[in-house]
Length: 501
Image (cartoon, rainbow, N blue to C red; front, top):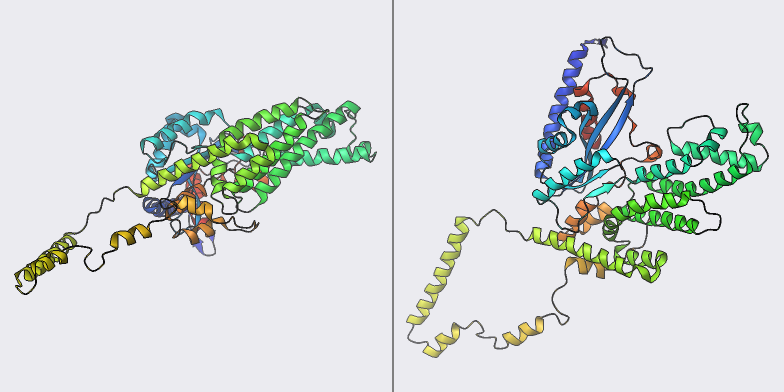
């Protein structure tokens, strides 16, 4: 290869890429070793379809390759959010050694085995045992601060995709009559169906969507189609807000998922309801039962919300029936805070230097020698010498004064209580939550460490249009085709490190 006067072979280029990767990886490992906070992992599956691409000679790679992507999400010690790919490898390769062994080795190699906080993943049975192994290791390493702390995080985009797919499956025959195209993204299918409904209302369906091979939908099918699209519209509205907002917070997830749940519940008791709404609510409730607590805890750490929003939310959507859930959230966040507090109070391994100890002993010795000088002085009466040794000498109301200084309303308040006592901040769409905690960390040294970890949790594996992908495995970049296992891993990982910098 000769570009601009430089001549190099593909092997030389590959070698340079691998060398840069090793250098950058070494820097990342050092950062992890020094990191004071914890790391939220995510495990994703991507699919590379090389069908139709020109294949190099002697290439024995299959046409379809599934890649496992392990990513670390954390906030560094300067309060800068990071998202780094730790490992990107084809699934067939790691099946030989086992998913569990591969992930644990990756965690160990990157020096984060003592820092794992949560794991985000899609709803896929293949991940269950893997997550269990990682969670057990986190418990052994005591990286979980409390029994109340959630560990498994489920991808919200995957939830909405599964719900939409189930809804469209219920009207698959009607969809095929309208559009004989299989879209990779569900919002494109939804948009086509909305256009068809409008065309039918305007009397232009046959003109715009007519097909010689299919009869148009019947009146009953149109009714069912409109109902399903009404349900999907609720999910589309939630997805639009959550996946097109830059850095969506847990409070945004909690509120919009609450709205989705309320809309589906309302539809489930409407006179024209169909059975599909019950299936959708079941899928949502499975997610909600697993995810509500962690979303609520992270929302409480938003100064625009605190416990006030949790109370408001339950009053709005559940009435007085939500009092027990509010109490459970408060108990959970107190339990986790106590865990962080205990961790911060653990004795440090460093010991006072001998010089300081010697200075202290010398000071005490000097003090004693002063009393010896006084005691040798015949001019000072004996009873005066005795009074001089009394710590209250010259201030005979010390006990009363100390009593006066004691708070009148009980013991000192914790950081958590002080945080709750502060007024809730007004809502602002452009509020920078991480920057707020960076600024307030001196005021809340323990609570800010808790926020430091919870704010790094990814509640979705994707954003923007990728969030509308139907299947569990999204499309991998075709630029990675036929590059070989080591080079693919090096390029994807290095790109994430350099991009963040």
